[in-house]
Image (tube, rainbow, N blue to C red):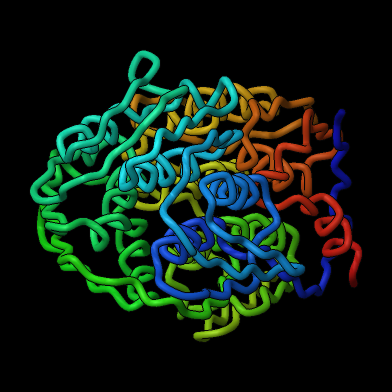
Length: 417
């Protein structure tokens, strides 16, 4: 299956509703499963990652009642033995591995082949040091885990994935001794750690974050009602398309009050010479078609935005250097190598580095590009397709991971004048 992009021939003026943040949703679902009482989560995204988390919780005996984009979650008993298939969802596999380790039940977790290749070893080592018994396959999925855990002091490699840290943080309040987490190495994606603490705070627990360590006292989560805010990473794609096509775009219910680090896409676009009106609850981009300017940026804290910035950089009038993201080679795809290889098909002047990319001005031509099972590559290539005729994207359905209706919504957005 392929999707042939239609270049935007004249500027549009549109409003777009972006799906809820899967990062917030999956954190809120874990917190709800650890809470006493009934929690209500509204504006849940309908992507594959959230679906995998909901299915996983149900498999463990957590009561989940869905109604449209809302879910009621209540844990009425101890976690039961079960088998979880996390599909391609890194957050689901890692968060549920930590949750499973808090129980005395045998819980098995597996996923698609590409997820099996993603790292999880540092999290398993940390859980074992806390008392978990884990049988794994060469340091990864498939695995079987049971506990319980005693809590206390634990060290975790902070240089591979912030999801390892977040996984430990969320179970910390439920452990008899709490957790004192020591971070080994220079942490990456720190905004996601802060996001985890913010979501935990919505459920009434506190987290102490200091340089190189995180302290969580034994506490009880409180059931609550949470409305999931729009996904900042997903918002980057329509914003980029509007910026490149001289268009005006409003993202509904997404603004400077966002909890997500990837809301920095607004600052990046401003750095590249795009005008944006940003209020706490709204974002309005107004492009007059001015040339984009290249930037030099360390994206280690906002790595999910790399494909978006790389696509924008292809149209800038000066080079862009993306730094500090060597770890994204272990995402859904090799987000440096695979991205560079596909951009070269358009004729982009791209140089691959160990820690990122350099993209210089070049004339682009249409191409058929692969998505490498990566939703973010697929949506980033649609940015190029808005300007370059003959852009064809293979396996476009991978966007179901975070935005199932993306291609339909893209057409609606660009056709409104």
